[in-house]
Image 1 (cartoon, rainbow, N blue to C red):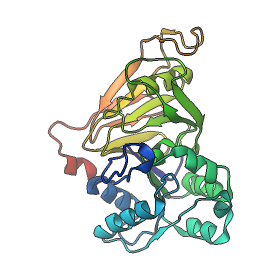
Image 2: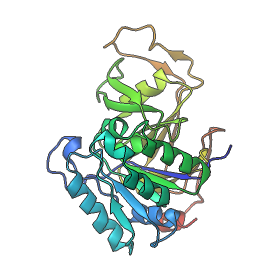
Image 3: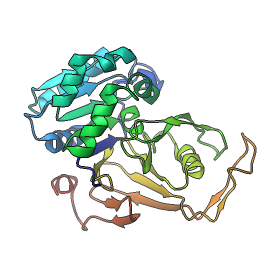
Image 4: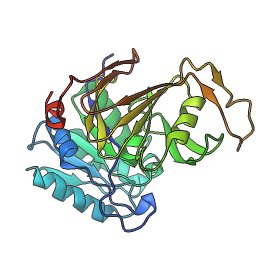
Length: 290
C-alpha cells in the first residue's frame, strides 16, 4: 500500500541556544524549508500543530515557531504543549490532530517524544492519517530523528567507530526503512550513524546537515531541500561487518559501505536504493519549486 502522507525530517539549525547542550537549544527552521512545509501542508490556510515535547523550554520554542510560521502568513496555528503521557489521550488534543493538516515536532531530546506520545491514541491517529491522507508530519533535529522505527537516542564519539557508542531505541515508526541522524556534519556524527547501520544493515542511514531536509512522499522516495548536504549510508551489501564479533567499546570495521552525498534537488528511491541527481545549474529556489 502506498503511503499518502508526507514526511519532512530536517537536520536542525541552532539559532538562539542558551546552553551548549542540545536539550537547551532552540531549534529554528530557515524560511526556505519552513515555507516548503507550509506549501506541502496546503498553503498559508493550513492548520499546523506545533509540538515542542522534545524541548526542555517548550514555551519558548512554541513561541518561536508561531512567529516563524506567522512571518509566512500562516494564522491557523496551535502549540500542543504535551509534557505528560496523559495529554496524548486528551479528547481536545485528539480532535485537533484529527483536524490538522500538519504537525511540526521541535528539536530537543527525541526520547521525550517517544515517552510522552509513542504508543498513545495521538500517535495512532498520526500514523493512520499519514498512511491514508495527505497529512504532513515535519520535524527538526530530535523531531526528525524520532520518525524512524529504529531511533538513535544519543551517544557516539567523533574520533572512532566504536561498538556501543551509539544509543538506540524505538522511534515513532513513521518511516521504518530509514534511520535518521541530525546536525550530522557540524557535530561529527559519522561514527554513530555508521554503527546504527552496522547494527541494522537492511535499513538506510540518513545524515542530515543543518538547514537541510527531506520531502518524503509515498513512503518510498525523497527529495533533498535546503542549503546543506545529506549523507546516505547503505550497508546492505557490506562485505565485512565485525559488530557482532568485537566486544563493547572496541573499534569496529565495516567494508563496502555504499555512500551517497546528496544536495538540494537530488532524489533517492528508498525501495530501489537509486539516486536521481538534480539538473546541472539548478538553484536552491528552483529545486524547491520542482
